Image (cartoon, rainbow, N blue to C red):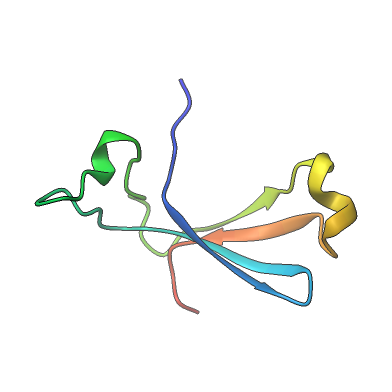
Length: 71
């Protein structure tokens, strides 16, 4: 089963520096993020994520950090 995360991607000069998933999702009023996404549960966890080969020509990186921490 696939899991989808709502993420912020930090990009500069065609280089992806960080993918940061949301830790809290809006689920009230007009916002129903939990309908499609799950929140990231691993606090202060860093892993390396491989970028799909289809987008390599437009980027300067093949791997990127996936992290919930600010540092």
